[in-house]
Length: 190
Length: 275
Image (cartoon, rainbow over all chains, first blue to last red; front, side, top):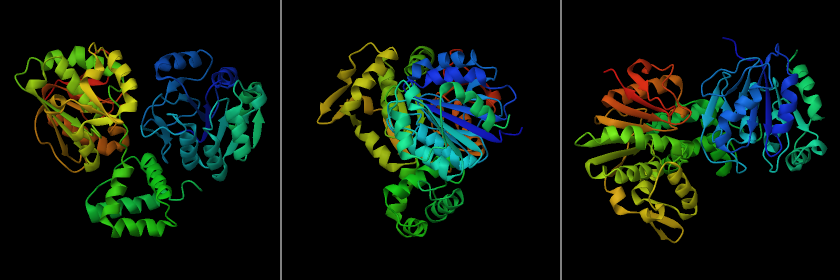
């Protein structure tokens, strides 16, 4: 089985679910990228989140499992209470080490790991949130030649996280929630 | 990359050094996590270059031990995943109760929080007196902490909540005494726990058990090593013994799948049905 040639990683915290619900219905079924969502949340709402996102998407939505290959046209959700890493052979790896930015999963950890595995063949999109998670990861994505995108802070429920990212990291594009689906389809070569 | 200056190839070099010089084998660990931790330690200890990092590991056995202890993950908590402990209470303990003597192996126990959690379950089921728990880890430093049975007092509120969610009905604070910033767990809970070093990569079986608990350890191994360790567990279990894994680990698609049957409650507990 061939793994996805391109990867989109979407990271969100407080207020991050809304833009995800907005962009998901716009993704096309023929998309060649794997989509990975890292969302800070309470571990209790696990299955509810997968169902919620499934209902909005023509693409299959599932929780990322360890050693599972990243497939094109699939939406993966980082499981609660683990960091999600990506191996060089484009499979998922889980890690239950210390929280980073008070978070597990941490967006930084996944962005950085994805940058090492996918290099220029990835895009990282950072959404609304109340902490600084994501900024360092965006720097690594940029250094590895990937594309960095941030939700327009003016449209974010909690603008702290996207604002921090814009201050700290080189950002290629700032997006409104309703522009995100078209942007992702474009990056994934649809 | 600035935060990950050490490449996967360089990490392989270090892991080979540690294997050849000191006998610790990390070469079959899943690379992504170990790369992250090797880079993390490089930053934390402020090495100016990869060459100096490597030289220190090769030439300084005390530092090499630090390297080994830091690149393995030792994060744990009491009653982690309360529904798992609930399943142990209701599905596993009643079976264990039928044995005259209960042998349990907790592999990769880290600092022992989950071992004490299980000792509490056994105590409440009035089984602790006829049980022995072998708690093993590759890391001697964490075992020493486990032996002391002292955990951070600041964590107790969370642990107490986990305990109650797992079906605990006693007063959780009766299991420990507060001692400055630590909670010291009762001596009678620790009496049946034997903390001992064991390396899942290189060491073999040392007994036959009715229950093996190994949670969030296999996720750090590559597929080949996972299969080998699962075979070790299978060989170390009595017929109808139980194997309990972490909440994201599975026996599906492994070499021992056919020998086990998962309990019907979605928790990660399997029963050995075939010798």
